[in-house]
Length: 283
Image 1 (spheres, rainbow, N blue to C red):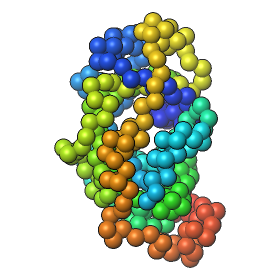
Image 2 (image 1 turned 135 degrees about the vertical axis):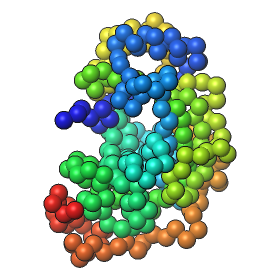
Image 3 (image 1 turned 30 degrees about the horizontal axis):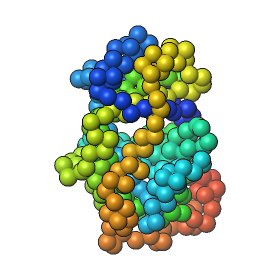
């Protein structure tokens, strides 16, 4: 079984740096890390990342982050291309005090629209059965229903990524960050009209599951790095203007959850009943 390199629980420290410094750090990292599985073999060990952020009409998750709440979360759909055959990741990124907990479920692209329209989750929505991802999918769905969250913004950037063999340390450098309003579910890759976020800089993120390794501490000291907030969604909304994302797609309705044929009860009655009735053999 391959290692889960998503680092479900971790510490995360961000820095906004210049391109020259980013190139020097790339050279330093080559002594300790290798390109991650998505970056290996690509120019500059980089690949494109697309994120569709979901939020309430009142932009509840944006406001929680902007106001610095210690325990908060974001709802997002992450994807890497526009192929109908590629998985799409439903993600909850929780900030709990100084740590980060990440819930992720890989689902079929064709499942996105019905799930966000209120259809109850079933194991067949998953790209591949995994008990933890099933739990994460149920949790994501429940939070979307509770907030009545809908698509708000499309974020795209180029990610240069490195990881150690144990998947306990991960370093990313994000460039060309762009964001634009998005209220649909096409999951496209065209963001020609998006605005540039953190223009002319690189976002460096140090991620580790235990203690920061000594070589990383020496890197921070040697390059005189100063940590800084670099929340792409928050910064993007501020630059776009809240009024441009605080509305939903016309006709995108909530409150009409599909009744599950396996449970004969709406999802919101009890998540436990869905978990019990829909197991790994129900596909």
